[in-house]
Image (cartoon, rainbow, N blue to C red):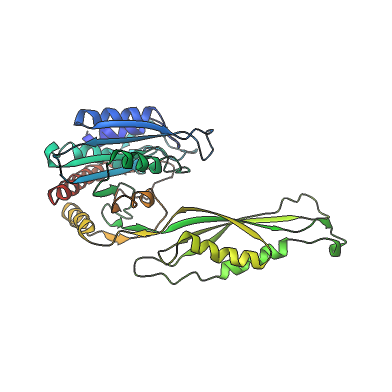
Length: 379
């Protein structure tokens, strides 16, 4: 059994549906402490489970190199999405079948974290400073996870020079894609108020539904941009349309909708929200917005070349530099240092029977070790 496989099995066997706390962090600490890391754990958030303020456990571990040496950080999350029904075997009982390791989190992203831990075991302590930025709240509300870790790091003066996030970025085979940026994400809740009344007397009421339909039609037809050199066009999607009206003879007083926008670096979250509100308010509605992350780009350069060259040396594949896909905690980490994401194949993430190829775990560990070593040596 490979080292990364062993570590991955231990992490998978610790159930950690978001927001994660407790046992899985005990396992992580047990893996890092023997390698010379100072491990700091803390809980952030004091609300009820299920709320945005639900308590989250976070872990920051650091192994200090010589004074003035470069600082390289690995980042990731130990929380997982709920497993759901229909698994071939128990989702938190890791099982090897053929050349695959099955279990919730095998790909997203306990497998990558296991590869990171194996990787640092091969790097001499005098090579430089290495840290782990590990949260239990990436798959959930992301309010008290990596944001809280960044606050902690700033208070302790632990800003890394570069950070690698182990999200599953590979598509068809390990090494074919890395993420050098991400689109921004925002949601707007739209309300259109009218006044209720009898359907036989519409002149005595104000039906809000036609106005909401007009708003959504205009938003759906809106061209936000054409994309740019590194980002695809921004897209707005209608997620929900709600009219709480069980009666068959009553014009409702309220109609509501929810839209999600994934936007590129052409806009900020506030700018894209203003575009939507202008449409909504023109039709007499209101909109409230939450921005989950801004678009960002780590421009191609030294860091991306180190990753690309290492991956090609280990796999024979030159990874595509991409900004596609959803959001990740890189959207927060980019505020403290340049950040790039690279990890396992994402075909089974969030699915039943999530699985990682054992060979990919071993290869990823070698890739991570070479990336970290090269970064530290170039300091």
